Amino acid sequence: MNMKLLGDADASLDALSNQTVAILGYGNQGRAQALNLRDSGVQVIVGNRDDEYFQHAVDDNFAPMSISEAAKAGDVLLILTTDESQPLIWNEQIAPGLEAGNALVWASGYNVGYGLITPPEDVDVLMVAPRMTGHMVRKLFENGKGAIAQFAVHQDATGNARDRVLALCKGEGLTRGGVFESSFREEAELDLFAEQVVWPVLAGWIRSCFDLGVEFGFSPELMVMELYASGETSEITGAMARNGFFRQMSHHSTTSQYGTLSRGPMLVTDAMRQKARELFQRDIREGAFVKEWSAEQANGSQELAALMKDALSHKMSQAELGVIGAIQGAHSLEKKRD
Image (cartoon, rainbow, N blue to C red; front, top):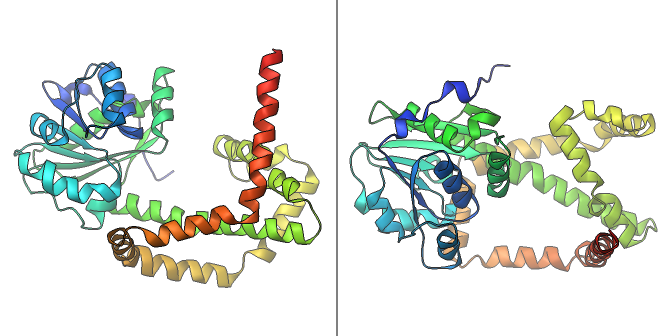
């Protein structure tokens, strides 16, 4: 394997000694990273606007303050608000209070990688990007394990940037799972590639297969069950992560193996691959999507709302309501019996 995975032995918390880590944004990742760092003995403060997440921080025995106050008080700033909110928060609440030698840490490479935020030259610019939801980052930590993650040093103003970012990875429990070095731009492009090339094909094809199945005479409810609602699909993807994409097929019948391996090339065409190349080059590598999405946000995300409305009005989305409700009802009844 060319990629070097670093573990607990490759990092030390010493780089965070006498440093205050400010968590800016106490949402999904913010809460998990704040709690993990605190449990590791790191001095942590929280900055968040006065909303439900502010109260969550209070409930977790933090003394939250505004983002601007936390940004001024912290030495290491973990910027964990949503990507779309960051440029405005950066300009108004973070940048004015920065001091030389601070470390700025992102969990996504999007804004820095695409030049939407340009940090000053006298601060460290780092990335710690867990490849797991915040809930699982915390749960794994509590169980003595860790999520796998990417890290990056985009700018080393202090000469201590790498030690700092690895210390954060260790404090969050990520070196238990393994961390590998990347870059802001690579993380951003890879994330967009999954969101705009991989998942659209899967989502679109599943919806098309639902339509075809109903056309062939299968009931909408059974199609939803077969495609995803039974939970079998999530079991398969879990086995892929544990055993390998194709190696997990040994747990399936030979009928399934032969059908999948022989029919795949008939459906995935060169034309599809070429379209994916063109989309990646134009929208992701050349940055057309960044401009499009920024314009969409400035327009109130009206197109996004229309797209979501269309998706939720599709017959598959309607059929799944009854199926998911029935499954959850059956599980609830089973628990009561136990």
